[in-house]
Image 1 (cartoon, rainbow, N blue to C red):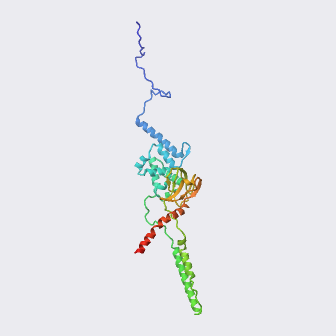
Image 2 (cartoon, rainbow, N blue to C red):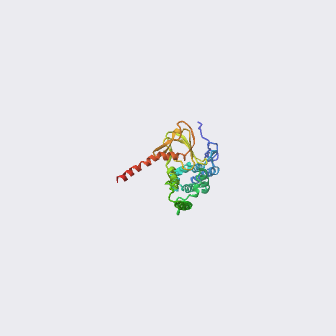
Image 3 (cartoon, rainbow, N blue to C red):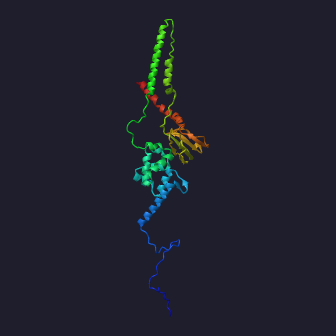
Length: 326
């Protein structure tokens, strides 16, 4: 009876297994690399992508501002904000604000040191990052006052002595004129009646105190905030046109614009936002359902001062009554 016998290889060697990738590449003769080498190769590729983003200032063909460049470089390197915050000792919300270029939460003088530490951690040229970032966000003045510690010595601006000298000269002139007038009146005889009206004293009093009595100082340190009473789109621009915020804000979300800096606010629905100082409502940004463009932030300071004045003025009567009672 015939038996089925499988043929033996001619050279008595087992057949080699051929490994072929899905794309048809023969990998049977390729030696695999170690895990350490694979990690180094991946890190090299990430570094190349990060440097390309920084040099071009673009990502997927989109032009990026410097804050967005820092974020894309960080993502290309595979880093998280929490990880950077632990090593750089910079709070995570500050790093997030730097990437979004929303600097109202960062104290004056701290922006440049934060940028230097952040860019150094990302392996980017610190000075170039600082120059591009401060130029784009309108904070060029931060470069001149970048020390986070208080300055030693005179802080207030030196005042000129010219007003004091002018006042002294004016007093001497008035004194001389008064003496001359008295001498002339005394020599005219007793029959002449001198008018009791003292115009010079009255006029001097008006000129000295008119500004303090009629001019209302507008404070620049009010915590003026623009709050979304419902979801809506808001844009905040600097005096040079720099966009500090341009997105849809959720209900209850707020933003503190920089005061006395020429900033403006625009919205697609003015009734969706209102100005507030703490819990005090100053007024809406604009009419309900109407678009508003380039509303001056500084002009709202007058409204904010008037809205908060009654709250501040409530305290003096109690103090006055307590004094009267004594």
